[in-house]
Length: 296
Image (cartoon, rainbow, N blue to C red; front, side, top):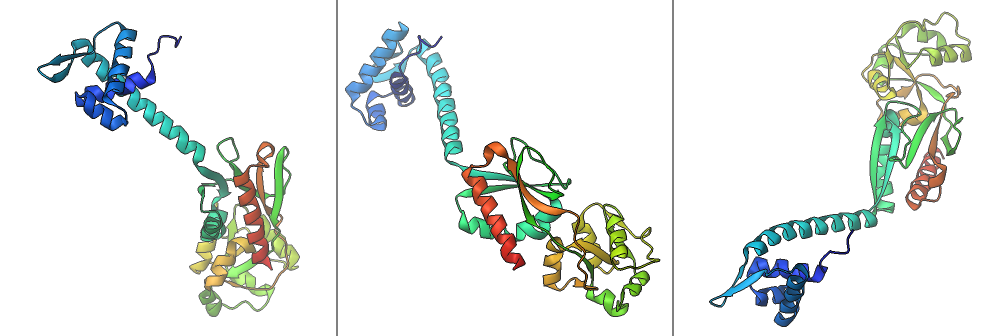
């Protein structure tokens, strides 16, 4: 199919000579002699069986067919240059596509990403936030953070953290309506995340009867529930890892000390066939170390 393609060097010499209408200027641009350019043009004309240039009064002009060919060859060489450069950039570019639950990204990962960037400045991070706890992991996503119970088949899975559920409220709210014992929780609005199940588990843990868990707002995302608590709208029950940033800022404080474990944990997950990818290994090792250092 491609046996009748003209030589690339001849095409380059022709395009350059036609653009400058000068063999001499073409030779200067291509860093060859004028004789070499003339030779390449002669090879191309012999290959095509047509005349591309005419000399008129010491001027070089394109023939009618030469003009048509120049227009087409210029576009072909431009496209060839573009696709070649694009391919070379893709080959040399290191990047990692990461999928995370939105709250984990907002509350924990994004504030710490600069540390990863400092350690691996040549790896570009492409971060996608998803609504699902066990979200996006496809051929376009290299690695993901899942929030669940760890029962995923045909994936490389490692637990990042097992955390407690904390009772949290804004200092201003507690100043107005203190909580000295579990019974005082009955005086407050309860903020729920996804379902009311965790508050029921906390009531059972505290042996607290009569806590009205059937009322209070339900938020689809932890970061929204945390913000509701920050603004004094009630007491929230949230995973320590997700709430730590607001605690450190002084926006939220622990209402009562408890040791109730979150039934779900955070995991770093990737496809088995990507287990030895150097970008994935770098991110996996970094995030495991970062979380463990944070918990010490």
